[in-house]
Length: 373
Image 1 (spheres, rainbow, N blue to C red):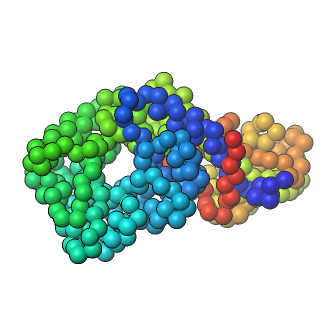
Image 2 (image 1 turned 45 degrees about the horizontal axis):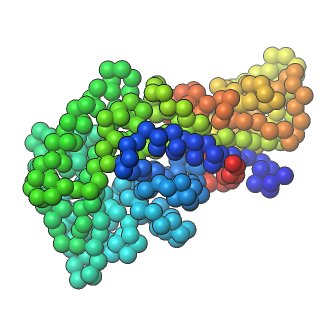
Image 3 (image 1 turned 180 degrees about the horizontal axis):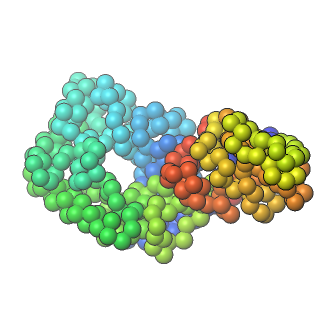
């Protein structure tokens, strides 16, 4: 037995990630680049290992959320271009440039601060201009009362090399009707970068806006590069699959710690929220909310044991939870799957009132990742 599998672990299928990558890559026109989003520790799958795989497969770019995530990849020997999608304090501009890390820039103020921090260093920092088209978070506003001159001014600052321009869709993963706002965002994006390029007198090298939802539903958005996130890990971001056959890469597993007999009237776990109604066998599973199993799933979860779904009972504790295994020949050491193949992470997320993105990212660092395939 692998020592990492003695309690609770996340089994990560590299074969599934490769399958998903190839399935999406096959949709791209020749020359269209593929950016793999590996922020948040590759959505809980392990950023370093996933990045190594993507590098081996011929991926063109990686994206992370912050400087620490980017430096982790560089320290692990990852050589692919890396784009930081989030904020980096301008004081670290030289660190970005020295480590060949590209920074997203969404305001003239930030661009000027980065440029000033690089003055006298002889370094050049690659940047991608972030255009705000309706997400309502960050970026140069390029519609309504937006200043279309600002992103071009930012791109012209000394020490900065504007390599690309991008935006982010907010409802491309929505159902019919809801996602139509994506067309508005796409039009704003095109008008925005065309205005920037007109003022610069040159075209930017990379235009990108395709997230996982658009990867499935909006092939018209692929442009020079796509950047799917959760789809890379086998999860559909919305209700539609769009003919794209994805395979979930993570299976969260745990091993039965004990099986206890209970009589009618016995109660289980904190708060006594579950009362035994008939003679029962209750298995103790060593996984709890400190491992990322949300407490709100108490009395709702249906893990799989011996190929059958069983009912989780009582409140989920910090380090363990209980399941009714009456009628099954369950013994300590038997493996239960919390989610993965039989029970999809999306189904569990719905029970928790959240999304599968959060469920994957919530699997805590103390849960070892075991790579297969």
